[in-house]
Image (cartoon, rainbow, N blue to C red):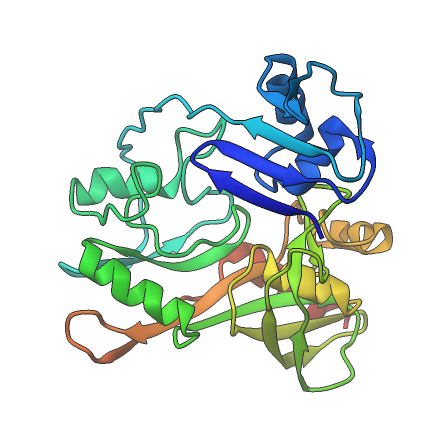
Amino acid sequence: MNTKEKKTNDYRIKAELSERLDKFLSVNIPELTRSAATALIESGGCTVNGIVTASKKLIVKIGDEVVLNVPEPEPAVFLPENIPLNICHEDDSLIVVNKPKGMVVHPASGIYTGTLVNVLMFHCGGSLSGINGVIRPGIVHRIDKDTSGLLVAAKNDAAHLSLAEQLKEHTMTREYEAVVHGRLKAETGTVNAPIGRSVSDRKKMCVTTKNAREAVTHYEVIGWYDSFTHLRLRLETGRTHQIRVHMAYIGHPVAGDFVYGNRKACKLSELFGLDSQCLHARKLGFVHPKSGEYVEYNSELPEYFLKVLEVLNEIQ
């Protein structure tokens, strides 16, 4: 396995495989795309065995030491936005919201407006925890842009630390509902398979043992249909795209998931008019940071999800 040491903005990597420099960097630095690696190489920010190189096509050989300097990103300005927000609960410690499908949770490269963070900044003013910095104020956990449902944000650092610890210890209740392709045979089950970033496509996650983290998803059948299954899913861990990756891994991709579904599944998803995954974060429970009492919130299934179930019942 390649080993790397990050010192401030410097990545130092010892090569154990021979491959092109731009690919080598994008594989070994998960947050770096291949195009970004090329830009850094061409700007003189990369050395191989102490020699600056500007060639992305240079073949890194086994034993070579590659050092990449990644400059600090320019600070961005994120402004509050007055966008309607579906609030399930709010107090002086936290806010629980029902995020709509299509909304990004926090700003990222190229996305500076219309995010949940922009909306929370308007609604809560300066009352958001600062642990995750200016880009993710208050954000304790995330759900995908096209996944709808419940999220909790912290209004102060004490609440943030308490909620983050519950996530870490797997004591926070996070239940989802999804429609997946195919008929699952077992009424209940568990997928226990580590998830890491795909080597072939850095924008995707996959079940792998390389640079992976433990991932556990429990599921229970709510209803069977001819070619689909309605599921309730409970996350024990919270990896990026976890439910979508795990369902695809066992051969039952989430309906409408054009990233992890196979070609046949994508074709069938057109039946519902879906342009993204049919996945909703329906239940969220945790110990309240201030009261110490367990609280739980539920969200009704959104209109797009109900339409999918309606179509399934019609063709049953």
